[in-house]
Image (tube, rainbow, N blue to C red; front, side, top):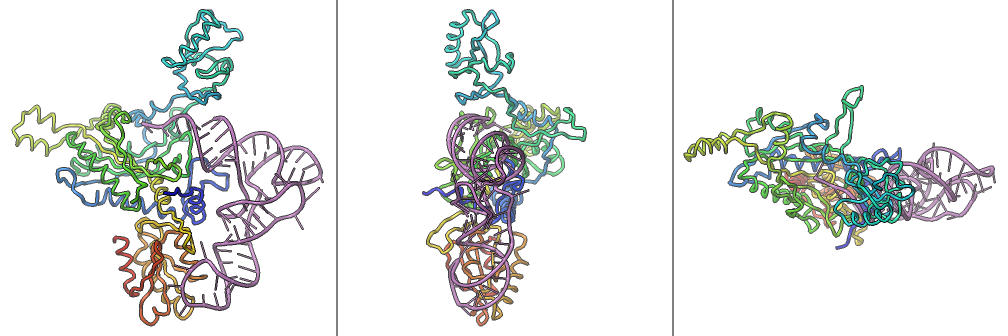
Length: 520
RNA sequence: GCGGGUGUAGCUCAGUGGUAGAGCGUCAGCCUUCCAAGCUGAAUGUCGCGGGUUCAAAUCCCGUCGCCCGCUCCA
């Protein structure tokens, strides 16, 4: 396997209008990317495919565990939620830790975890202060040095030492003094202010994930839509994370779109549903063009799991910049009842589900009242397939990018027809002899039929080779050419993008041909 | 955040102090009966941005921003 050139992919994305740097004419802004005309359509196609296959006809109509039908409903929740949402979810608590870096060793430490040996008497004079991490190798080493320097020592927290005195501090693993940076906040959530006065009381966050909106509206959906467990709620939209290091083209962007499903089920069935969604999500990515060995499903090890999770898998793609490793496209997590329980506690609102079917079933089985009550009223467990749409687009771009030196136009994008932003193109072989008129008519017919799913192009300029080449880079799967035979025999050639092969089909069968290839 | 690299036309890049260039692409015309073909012509740049040195800066200096690579981080 040869690794594709990320530089070449990025150049093509710019050149053909898939992806532009955000705010480029102002010098760009780190971690943000815009989509050009082809990229915007392509990303829309990906989102539509997700919406169709996860909400409108979940899992392609497959039956779930126990032969149960899979029902999902859509939801659209806001980027800005009540700040308490993020306290309940754990995002506020988990990511507010100030850190200090060591310029010498490149180590990074939690500011409030660093301790320091100082002289028991107080004044260290011009001798250094010895920082260390409790229960690490640095503790004994620094203690020895400190006792040699001061005799009696005591331990204080680094937080008690003025930053101005950091110049005298010897970092835990450092050889030279004064290598620790001032403490810096690493808060992955974006802040904003709600209301024009923008005081601290108005502080709010831009969501770091779309999932919490689903949990927050879980009760409303249950109360107003007649859904019954098991069922899913899908939510797509933009999320924000202040990534420490945005890197690798759009892979780690600070603003990105997610497509998340929360599938709620009875705790006893949750593991079966987890496996169901895990396996389907893998098949789904394969179905839209990530069919090769670059896509893997990776089950997390036990020690990687969150404390509440009974299982997590990642769908991972081998990007050119991760190869030979893989990068995450989607995580499928068994989240237990963690999120609903958290929101129930923080909001003081009952988020239990009353399962009448379960009650009737248990009654029929003659179970005790206590058991029936316990088993038919519960906080549902939740399976979360959470996909990154921008990462999906990036993986599809990387997978599609192909260089074939034997072709007159070596670079082409082998998009799956469902994802391709341009679905078909119509060319008159030469711009005369009545061919443009026929082409225009066919173009109008195809546009009429397919405008909902993507572009249909018509091009009569320049040589036929250039026109094919342009469509290759845009990833258009089929080009139809009107030639002399069209005028006499009512047939056209259809050129397959990936093979360059042509076949003749009847002019009046072109529309049906495209429909079939698009699976419509 | 640290270290290294880099930034000139849409793309790839040349240009080491003295009039901003090439190839490709794009556009127009001609030609052209199937693969970036040929001919002619055209448009496109605050040389990433800001400051400084200089008679003169794409070029030297300082700062800054973006991108790439490595480290670090990544609920």
